[in-house]
Amino acid sequence: MSYMVEDENKQETRTVRWFYHSIPFVLLFLFWEILARVIHDPLILPPFSAVAKNAFSPVLAYHLGSTLAFSLLGLLIISLVGLPLGMLMHRFKKAEGVINPFFWFLLFAFGIGITGIAPMLIMLFGLSQLTILLHSILVPILVVALISGYGAKLTALRIGFLLCWSFRIGGEMMFGITTVGLGYQLSKCSFLHNMEMMYA
Image 1 (cartoon, helix red, strand yellow):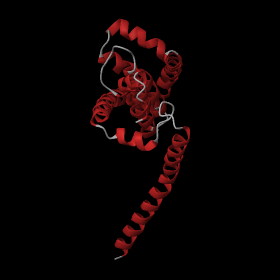
Image 2 (cartoon, one colour):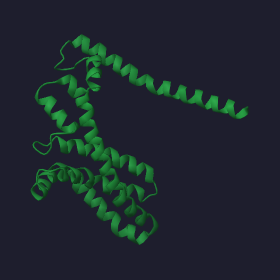
Image 3 (tube, helix red, strand yellow):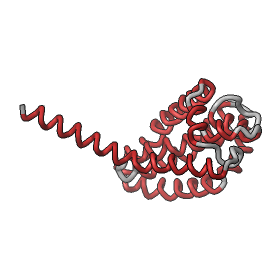
Image 4 (spheres, helix red, strand yellow):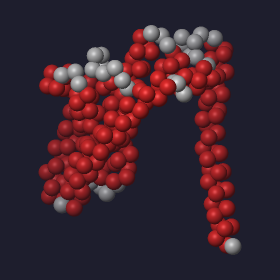
């Protein structure tokens, strides 16, 4: 009986927590809707209600699925390469002394010149999905290795996936490489001034 009461209390706590978490988003979307109605210019800020309708379109779901699938593939590669390197640095201090400064240098070089890396990758691998994949995993591998080197594996993977997702979308936005993905859809909608779909 006590277990049932505890489960009910946990469920109530979870529900209350989700309710409080949702309040900022509800206020944001409400403010968005009101502001869009006041501005009354969909080319600047379309109403949230119109954006929400486009968010559930099959076209957007297709592009979202493509970006998500390749991002998960990137996460797998990042995990297989970055985590072992991080574990190596975590267990062996001599290895950390050699690898850590070099990785920080690469992270600084790649991070500052991530837009400059894209043309170099295109020259080496052409206009292909491989180019976008490499563009989306180079920096995350270094980040995951460095963070997991301090023992925070789960945090490293979360940050690695977010970076991979961001760089993936950025790579898809490069002209002529692909015709699928959120990045391509974002560029296309921006060019066609389809603001509702772009915001979605």
